[in-house]
Length: 73
Image (cartoon, rainbow, N blue to C red):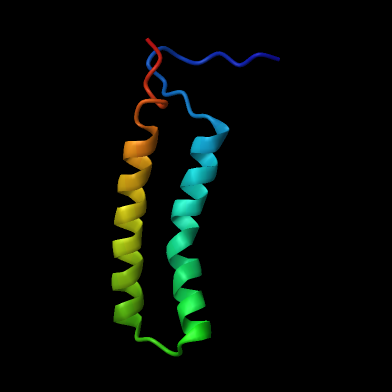
């Protein structure tokens, strides 16, 4: 069964979804690795680090995949 996209709907590939999953999970994984290897860290530091990593991952995703996720004409 072939799915049809509506006019103007973005084309997302499997690699876009995998990269998005990595970008969402990366801050959590990095904080847990830090806590495991180094030690306890305050909640404020965890949130600050997670926000910084999330923003950087979002920018990387934007610049890497903006040309391949263009809207269908």
